[in-house]
Image (tube, rainbow, N blue to C red; front, side):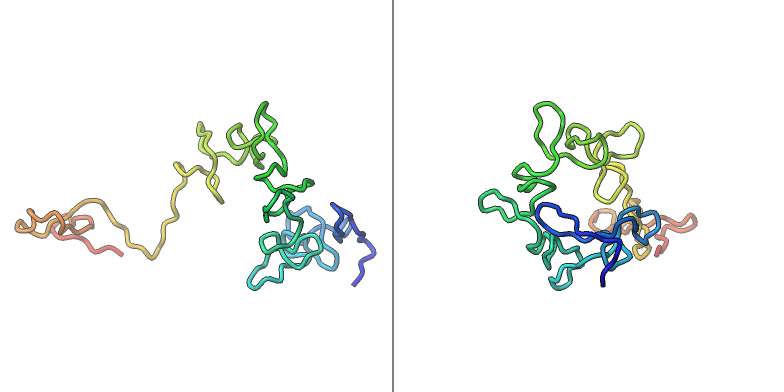
Amino acid sequence: MTNPTSKNAMRNGSSVRVSLGITCSVPDCKKRVRTGSYFCINHGGGLRCTHPRCKAAARDGSLHCIKHGGGRRCAANNCGKGAVGNTDLCKTHGGGRRCLHPNCGAPARSGGKVQMCQRHGGGKRCKVEGCDRVAAARSDHCTLHRKPAASPAEPQVTSEPVLLDERWAEAPWFILDGPLSEEREEPVKTG
């Protein structure tokens, strides 16, 4: 299937087919679609990795994603990682964007201050006012301020110990968890 609005875009010696002027069908996505598709590469357009159970995008005319051997490889000796950006190196060996802070060559992080490493303010930060810590993965908060999602399958557990009677008072290993009812000295069943 040919598309009159597409052309071959040469990038680092590889041919990538993109449609000119047509944006992805996903609402609020402004990226261009891949030829023969109505979606950008991030939303399922283009070729997918042929490795079993992998749904990642195939890279640079290959049949595989970066993880499974597709795309350009790092030029450093015995390094099998994928090359980053317009360089022939992986992040470990100096590829990709670098921190612009003086005397710092660490990899730059997206989000936060423009083209800075995590130490110098790059990367996503915690949204709690006054906290400058790095946000945890897939979260808007740092590990200190992130609240774990409550599982509805787990019963509520309180830290208030309840003893059955006096003979068990000497046995701290036999403690039930649960709030006391106001009328009786028995634990209330929860969950």
